[in-house]
Image (tube, rainbow, N blue to C red):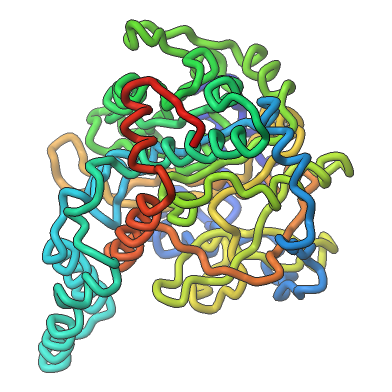
Length: 496
């Protein structure tokens, strides 16, 4: 068996070919005669193919092995100083499609346009799909349909949401995300007797977009005056999508006969793409069609000027009332001085809708804690996972992990998913799905837990839409927030 092929990330072409070769290597290692296998065989075996290499050595993490963050006891002055001096790098992952919501790019979702009946309908449909997927039929299915119709009512949705979503401000999820960042930075500036506009202009942000809606979202930045950020310090990157792979005579090929089978390669590819040349760019605020692209060395220099990077996900509902987590930033800065280049926060599983993601275990072979993605944990169920990685991670001294990933890439897993072939007929293809959290295998990583564990609340499915509405009402209840939104659109900043 040849050695594991290296993942090359200097360019898109190097990445796409090396990923294909890596997955071929995985297939050859698993199957006795790879020339005889079909896509159905690969799909059936993908849990084994993707299994974490030390799976049999994993045991549940013990809380004594995890650093405890006590929000009430840790000092936050150094965290505030990092923000005031522009030493904190904000990364916003906004490329994701609301696949399970079925509503398009998450950044552009606007709950102001949905009625309680709309939301109830989405939840009922999701529940019915889950029943059908589980094989429920006949009288039992009819009984469950009746129960779902009774339980998921307009009254129930209003109760869970805290109000009618049509009464929310007419602002999309992504714009709310950016506005909260600006609002919190201005608040910190005011508390430290600094000029809010000047402090906001010191911040550096990288916004990750997708190919379908990139221009529309960049236009939103122009419409909101870059949310008070200095346009030169707002960087964008469009995450590339890739054709599906098919197998023929034991070899993998990209089906480039159609664009209908293209998909993103998950958030791990997003991380690796940051190592490519000429993919990160600035836009001219007076002409957003004019873009200036950066070489990887230029982006490396920008990262080296910052003490910490935090990768945010636009679907994180807790962010809508607290974009700046000063206690965790303070701890990350402290850990950075001790040689850690990644800090992963562990939270409790969401009991309302258990979800997949990074799960924390102790690896007896490596003799350390690890964070392993659910698709690498064979047949483990979401509800069996006690500790999940929160949906964003700190990277103290961010240039260090960037360099490590540029040199070695990230581990590669894959998934067989449905697409459409040249004739427009449904067809299964292979797609790489590397995960961002696997950076914990490339950098010295600290695992932290709040003294009081909080569940993850992300807007990932119709079942959590009422929680999203509630979070948005809570955001608008913040002192001066509605006025702040109005003033940002006008390009004015007061001492909020």
